[in-house]
Image (cartoon, rainbow, N blue to C red; front, side, top):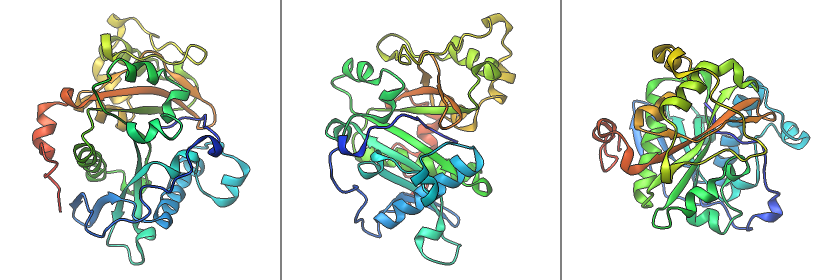
Length: 292
């Protein structure tokens, strides 16, 4: 489950400000299901623990290629970590401190923060600035670096990640969520069925259209529409992509191969107003479904 990009801006290019999660009250839990809970990171040490989880998934499991320093530290880290909020899923049944309980994470970057901190991360792969510029009255939020430890890749963990993102977006008046979703591997043709289904059936249109950067653009239209078995295409989708489609998301034009993270990326676009009523009812218009 990744929302990843390979290119980064050097730390010096991003405003030097402490991470929003440096100090947070203990009452900020956004949701609970059984022994799992979701909330924002409360400290720098919890962000560090989230980076360790990301390293385990992206490098040890998915063979991402990070810098020698990141490999030495066993942390997936970049300059955006200092300006993003970090959504966590914790297993409170694990003995020890909160850092040991973190089993999943999501990185959240609001438009107002991105505007003063070097821009959106996904702009390095997709023409996000053009999309944002067409909607000056909308507030955007980027979701990225999504990952969950293998033993916790269950429906309830995904539900808690979405619960947290939904509650956060409501709190901050977000109108549009977007981010990169990844297919494993760097050969788009290996995902011809799924990518072609996305191209023919859920491509973002009109004012919501957004394209991969021209120099990185890889064709998603790899099969004719009449040759696509929709059911098989959905089975071939990464769980994160399927989850976004259920919510009502659309997909940008063109894929991007991320050699560093060993993925093929597509851009998810999800205006709040297009979220399926079924899911709004499930989680609650006030994000109260799993609220603690």
